[in-house]
Length: 193
Image 1 (spheres, rainbow, N blue to C red):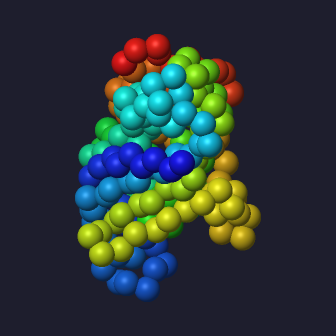
Image 2 (cartoon, rainbow, N blue to C red):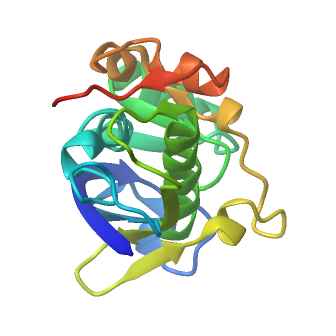
């Protein structure tokens, strides 16, 4: 069975080297919609694949890290990157350009790690991430699957190369969340949310 949870955020970026001049040369923003699709052949004690309330914890917090933030590409001009970090408290730096395609891959890897590190508490079994859909506009989206997220052809993404600003980290329920996920330290789902 497949379930879908929708998240939203507002974000600014530049997509260098794309064909559209406005997008590749100017900071601009989008109202993103992120669909997280989870699947399992089993249902938990509440007869659900995965309680939507549980997605509001670590999955939502990581996706919300991009809200009212600027997403930077670590290989962009160093002066630009430093200026954005100087004048914005909320930023995320990625090892890939922040296109919708790369956002789907990055978010896939983040959610995949959350699920891998989560100790389930309500009979959830074999909950897997099916895909991530990133709606950048009302008319265009990118959908990323496991093979895309881990594709060397599309550019290797190491979670260790994703950097969240101190302001973003301070707003998580656990400011050490990213370090725990990077070090594969297990986090426990609550019995009730």
